[in-house]
Structures are given as structure tokens and as C-alpha cells.
Amino acid sequence: MKDYKLQKTFKERKLEHERLIEKCPDRIGIIVQPYYSEDSNIPMIDKRKYAVYPDITMGTFSNIIRSRLKLDASKSLLFFINKKSLVQVSRSIADIYKEEKDEDGLLYMYYCGENTFG
Image (cartoon, rainbow, N blue to C red; front, side, top):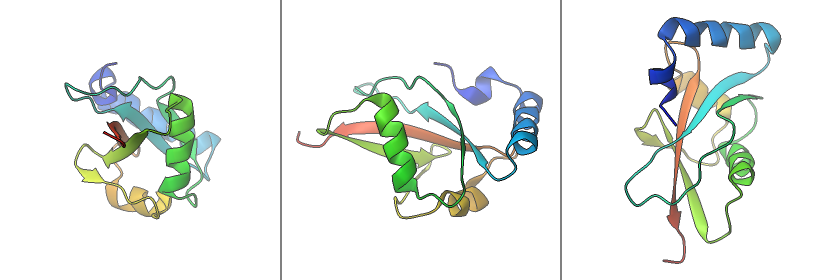
């Protein structure tokens, strides 16, 4: 799966955010993509775009993504914002969005996994 920012132009991404705000003004647009390393064994997600309520925590959102990926309990799931910073599960999506949203208005999250039990 090609990186969303490489697949769509800035103008297209900005327009997509504007449409989301028009349709769901009480939600935040999040793009979720895999962050692959050579030894990654986490599956591709079937849906990249999410419109979420700002008051949910990252832990709740993580559970939503985890269920879409159908991960077993032996794998941990890590999230990075803009490919650089890990996300605390106790933070609200609104707080993360305020600090990390992209110029196009969307929030970009990348996931990767590790085997919890070696």
C-alpha cells in the first residue's frame, strides 16, 4: 500500500478534510497506515480513513484498529504520529490532533507490531 501522502496531492487531501468537516463537523479525520520494517509481520489494514470522535482515547482507537487487523494476543501494536513519535494510550484523540495534525487538516498515524512473547 502506497503512503497516502504520496498517493494523493496536498490539494486532494485538503479537499477530503473539508468534505469530512462538512459531513461530520464533530469528528476528526485520521489516516491509518502500516509502518513497515523488513521484519514486520503485521497485516495490512482494510480501511485507512477514519472519522472519530475527539473525546475517545488512543487506547480505545487502538482497540478499534486492532480488531480490524484481527491480531492475536501475542502481538503488540504500536502507533506513531507522522512517523516520528509514539502515542500514549491515555491521551485523547483531540489532544493528539491539536499537536500533530498535518497542514491538510488530517492526522496521520502509522502502526507497527512486535511479538510480545518473543
